[in-house]
Length: 123
Image 1 (tube, rainbow, N blue to C red):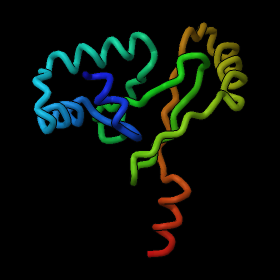
Image 2 (image 1 turned 180 degrees about the vertical axis):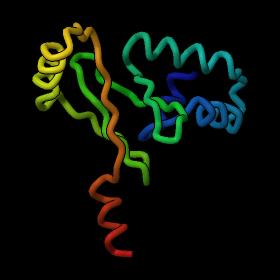
Image 3 (image 1 turned 45 degrees about the vertical axis):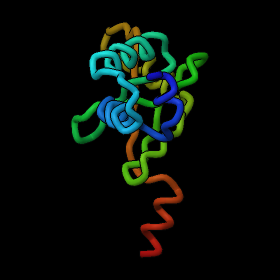
Image 4 (image 1 turned 180 degrees about the horizontal axis):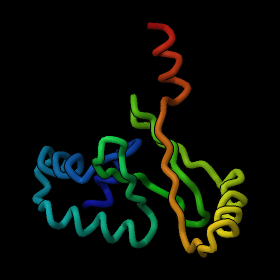
């Protein structure tokens, strides 16, 4: 049931969004079940948890086959996956200059999608 709630969502969503959806549909799915399912989906890499600029946590569906980053629209919630586009070179430079070995990284970008930019310009 939690997977169906996730599939019905577009853009990013929070655990509280899913809890509200479950309550609205009278599914009988508890809060703890939703949090456990989200943790499992993140572990399986079909969802990724993102840290929003306001400090909240949200989730986005992901394609687990390749490494990518997310661009999140702060106006409408649309999420786009962005491939590496040169970040690997920057990480190589960071490793060389700091002596650290980077085992993993995550980049989350926030802004306005083209559609929300057009709406804002038209106002």
